[in-house]
Length: 214
Image: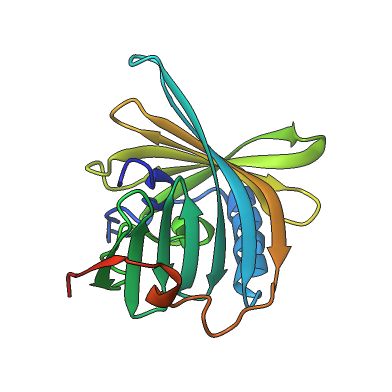
């Protein structure tokens, strides 16, 4: 499951040492991008995940969607759903018709969908790389490098729109040779949210097996 949900493992162990001197151009873009997303009450996005590993001759594509509001989120990806209401997290696996329930701690969980928008603020150095175009739109590319050398991620590249400072895609490079590219296909700011969005309703999953890990 952790492999499939690799796009969510950006909240890896952070270094707490003082940050080195940062690239001011990259910092300004990142601050604008972060402010954009944090100003939203919620957002919904459809995305594509591409996993590549040259040594293993692997290239896999998955599609999914995510809804986020503050610390709350709901993700659908490859027959799985992860639902978090800020206190409790449910992980549902369709093939097994099984749901695991656990307490949610944003400081400990590997799953943190909002991490990409604030990743640079602690434990990472950032530098401006280049201008590029993505789907015909002018973008800036910024590279993040963890200060903690034990971090399994050694580099993250963000592609940010010059026009509205939205994240168009990001690529995560891991020491095991895996590269994960996440491309936003459709983005909806402030979608309608109801009380059931961030809670698991087992009445909608007939015969579901519930495993409470709390």
